[in-house]
Length: 379
Image (cartoon, rainbow, N blue to C red; front, side, top):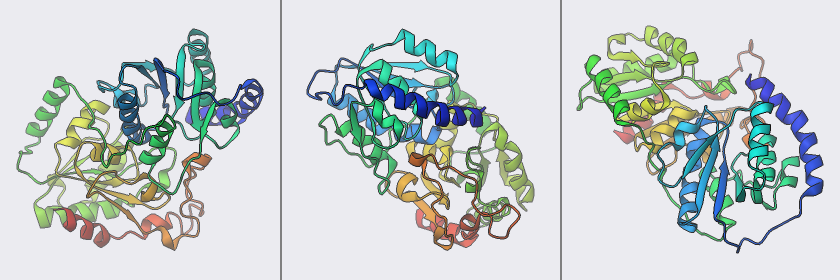
């Protein structure tokens, strides 16, 4: 499904963008009053979380405007109950759903802001929905925006999303991520989960997320090292370990747990929680350790001390945002790192052969002791 969406978006989407670009009237006046605004973000959980400061900036700039967000079932829960958002609209990434949205929303919005870094479909949606549109200036998709912003890959993505809002004349900045909301029933479920697994309020509870999204599995640190790390955390700090992740990461998490000597101190929650329950669960932990993936950004947003492990990507761009959080990177031993460049559509598996000793070279360069040193800085 994901491969098909990417193939269609890249090849068919390029043709559509080049054609529609012939009808783009050019840059609009940002001094005009925008009463209805559509923000578009369709993909990753982590990147969706990183758009929240930009939406906060938009609300501060235009406090009386109606701000709607267009998302998918994959990421919409990030926006639920956010005080800066009036309506969450959902779309599926299939032609029928896309065309239905376009026909129902042609020029309905005074302003459309495309927060996707690469997808063509989001640019097409913004072209039809917005009288004025803002997006990044690279690729054929840029032909569809009235206002184009250079994507700065030398700074954190939070700042790069904020650059879209700064086009409207605001200098808003922040050193934190807004917290992610969850319901009372989510909290009740998580409280029962902790009680059922004998986790007390004063326990040194560490959430560990050993997986990564299917788009770039090479971001995963070797599971044997996660097991060794968790055993050390139990021995040094009496830690209770909670493994977190999606359903397709449950087996990986269980492999880590089975490789531990102190597995009685570890619980595997992967695949057992809704996204909003994961927001609550991670927020109750004392420390988070995981790969460059969505749960890491959840932890940072919930104010949990966070250590993210990086290799194919750079923490300068996508590290856990917020004071004191750590993005651990040792990919300098790899000639290809960073091989992940989201804004260029480059999200490959490791560029070394799978059967070679160099496969995941950058991630394997992070030792258990490297992570433990960072843990000691935070606890």
